[in-house]
Amino acid sequence: MELKLAVFCDQAHEGADGRLDLVGIFDELAAPGFPAMQDRMTVALVLEWSPDESGQQPLRADLVTEEGTRVLTIQGHTEVHSPADPRRPARTRLILPLERVVFPQEGRYFLELIAGGETTRACSLFVMEHGRPA
Image 1 (spheres, rainbow, N blue to C red):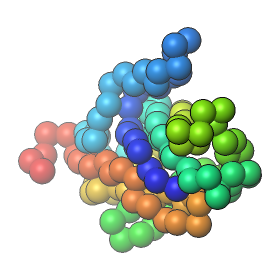
Image 2: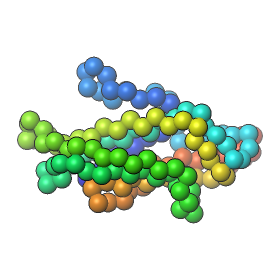
Image 3: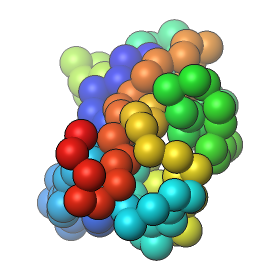
C-alpha cells in the first residue's frame, strides 16, 4: 500500500467525472480554549495497492496526540479490485466525514493510517488557542 493523498478539509466528494473534489483544505485550527470541539471536518485519503494486495484489506485510522494518545479511531475495510487496465494501479478513495471531534489540548495531532499491514503517519493538524501566538 502506498499513501498518495491525505488531507483534512471542510468537504470532499467524488465528482461524476471521477475526480476527487476537495473544499477548504487546512492543517491548523484555532479554538477559544481546551478541550475544544470541531463540529465538522473531513479526512480525504487516496491509497494505491500493489497487485498482490487484491481482496479485502482492513483499515484503521487513529487521530493521536504528539504523545501518542488516541483521540478517535475509525475502523473498517476496503475491497481492493484489480483494475481492468493492468497498467493502472488499484486505488481506494476514502472520504471520512467527522463530527464533534474533541481535541483535549493544544498541540499537533496526527492521523495514523494502518492499512496493508503498514502504519503510516498520513497527515497532521495543529490545534492552537485562538489569539495566542504559536
